[in-house]
Length: 282
Image (cartoon, rainbow, N blue to C red; front, side, top):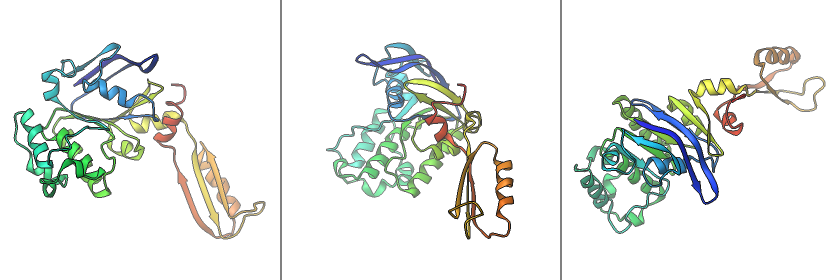
C-alpha cells in the first residue's frame, strides 16, 4: 500500500505539490490526472524516492521511499528513465533482474516485444522500443506496487492493448497500480479511481463516472440535416445542454419531414473535470 499524507514539495520558491494526501490499496488501478504542470511527475518522484518532500510523508508498505524494502515492493516507470545506453537490451534486463535477486522474465520480454531486441544496444532503440524496455524493468520483479508515469507513451495500438492486459492481470493478482496519464479515455475505462491535480493540489478524487456526474458539464448535440431547417442558414445544428432529453425532443420536433443525415449526442468526460480544476463545487 502507498500512503501519502500532506505531501508538499517545492522547487525553489515555487510550491509544485501542496498538501496532497491519498492512499493506494491492493487490487486497484488509480489514475493521476491533470494538465501539464499540475504536479503529477513531482508527486511520482517523491513516491519513487527520487525526491524528498519538503513536508508531509510518503510510505511504501510502511517503509520510506528509496529504502531497500520499498525498492523491492515497487516498480517505477519515469518519463525519462535514464537507461544505460552502452548495454544491450538483454544485458539491461539481466542487470536489473539481478538487482532484485531474480532471473529475467522471458514471457514478459516476449509480451513486450523485446525478445528479438536482446542483442541490440539500448542507445539505438526507438522511442517505442525504449518505452517497452522501461516497462519490462518496472514489471519483471512482479512488484506489489506499480507507479507509472505516462506508460503508453510512444506505444502503438497493439502494444497499448497488451499493456492494458498486463496491468489488469497485475490488478487481479492483488497489485496496486498508480498511473499518471493524459489519456483520459483510457483513465475512464481502466481506472477504479482517479486523482485530479490542479496547481499542485488534489482537487478531486473518486470513480471517473462519479466525478463526471458531479461536474455538471453540458452534453453536446450535433444534428445534420439534408437541408437547413426553417430559420437556420446551415444544415448543421450544435447545441450544448445539461438537459439532453428535452433539448433532443424539441430539436426533433423542428425537423418535420426534413431528412436527418446525422445525429450524435456526446456526453461530458474527464476532460471537462480536469479543465474545470475538479467537479463543480469542489
